[in-house]
Amino acid sequence: MFAQQRNSMREEAMSTVMRARNLSKWYGKHEAVHDVSLDIEPGALTAVIGPNGAGKSTTISMLTGLAKPDGGEIEYGAQSQSNAPAPRLGVVFQGSVLDPTLTVRENLSIRARLYPGTPRGRVNEVIALVGAESFAGQQYGSLSGGQRRSIDIARALINQPELLILDEPTTGLDIATRRTLWTMLDGLRKRENLSILLTTHYLEEANYAQQVYLIDHGVIHAQGSARELIQRYTQYTLDITFSPEHRQEIEQIARDYVARAQRFDDADGASASATSTAASQPDTATKAAATTTTATIDGNHLHLSVSSADECIGLLTAMRPYILDFRCLRGTMNDVFLTLTGHNENGTVDADQITTPNPTPATTSKESRS
Image (cartoon, rainbow, N blue to C red; front, side, top):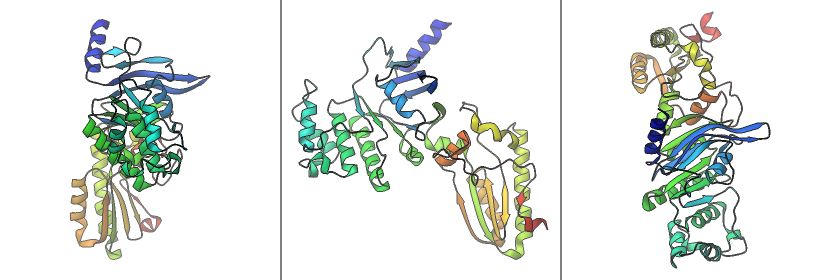
């Protein structure tokens, strides 16, 4: 039985560039990483996302061989870390290792000499790959943050890696520069058939990755594409401004909807009361989305959590005669993180975003109850 399980793991590993299973790392009495497992697929961009101190850099250190795991196993292709060399890696850590007084070309040329057999034109090639031709003659220290980061990536590409690993590559960059960097990485992935693993604490950057691992306090809470995670762990939010004289009609429609949603949840074995503990539980294949449904009326404004786009359309159709304005918003990765961990990416609990399950069909303002 054990041999069959091992053979199955080997077969799965053959389809991955790198595979980690049940990694753990202790620093004294503090467990920085607990039971972390992840797969790096060929040609995919994989992101490990979580707040500062979540265990991202420790995980990267283990995957690159800079730190020895206290538990678990790392496999490269079909062989364990102890039996085979790692694939060619290109690594970009948070701090730069390039000389600020040398030009971009000088820095990269020196690095190229560290790899015997590097093609003579490789430096020019990586400069072109990251779009740095216009500033290749400038001193590295004179470059902008985004330009320096692109040269750090060029340095990591010199040895033609199979896997590019980047630790917090977008930290400190403005939004426009971060988007440019992501576009460049995606282009590299496609042109070079490059596997990329990176960490970031910007939750919205999950949208750029094919596979996302959400980590907090050293534990992987969920994995999947950003779209899958949002569908699994968030709802739509429907905000409606209505004619004050039609408050009663709006309130009745909202109450009926929440009551129906509550009955569906109860029948499906995933009642609203059960979702209050979901945030503390790691992800599993069968874990249902957070489905607590609430409605809040404040003056002539309705705020309603809705399970799907179709439900939004149905509610808008029912309320159409009374609506002055509306918006229907999909959940975000911050909502996913909040659902799974109980706090936002900054590590603080957001009282405005956490919904306490309410056994009543709808929650209305004091004015409506008087």
